[in-house]
Length: 116
Image (cartoon, rainbow, N blue to C red; front, side, top):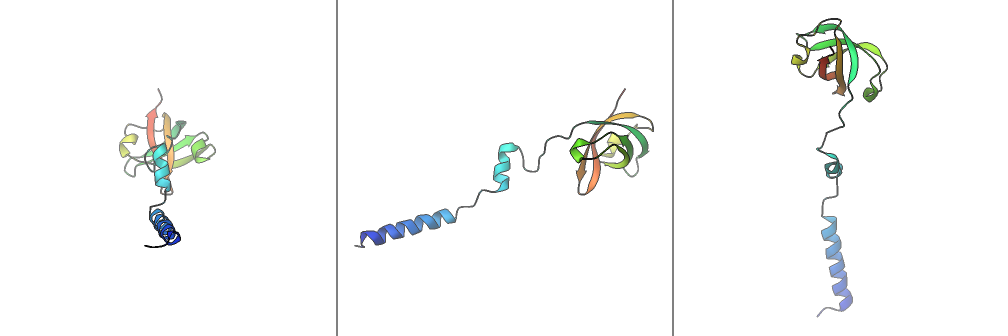
């Protein structure tokens, strides 16, 4: 029979090794508490005015107020629509409420509605 200190050393080493082989908690594990991975809080709606619509390219030029979620001041700029259907029926001068975001380095409109 092995001496007691040797048995305890082997047990401690085995327990340490087993613990070390368990995968560490990742950011993805933590994000499970906050919703699906990659999800974010819905961007707030902003108001603007349509200056130009390019349905073929899926782009719209909007004059808008500050966009807090993008840390952007009021200005006029071009956005790409995430779905060209968002731009159907839009015309210059329409007042709109929209949601803008930044995706893959480009500014996009993810939702857009004409304000009547």
